[in-house]
Image 1 (cartoon, rainbow, N blue to C red):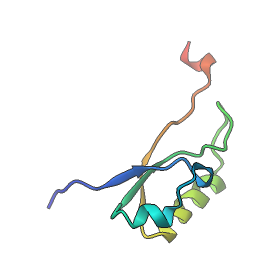
Image 2 (image 1 turned 60 degrees about the vertical axis):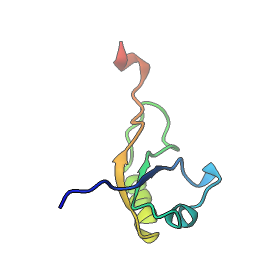
Image 3 (image 1 turned 90 degrees about the vertical axis):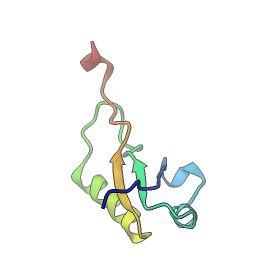
Length: 76
C-alpha cells in the first residue's frame, strides 16, 4: 500500500531542535545533509554512517539526502 511519509528537514544538532522533539511530531523520516563537510569535499563514509545512525536511534529513517554541496567550479 502506498502512502505519504511525514518528513522533516533537519539541519543537525546545531539547528536548535532535537531529533527526539521532531519524533514527537509523528515524523517518520528526516531530510538531512552532512552540513559539517565543507563545500566541494567528499562526504566521508563515517560521517554518513554517523548521521544515519543518529537518525535511526530516534526511530526514524534518513529519507532524503538534501543539499549535496557541489563546488561552484563544477557548476560552471
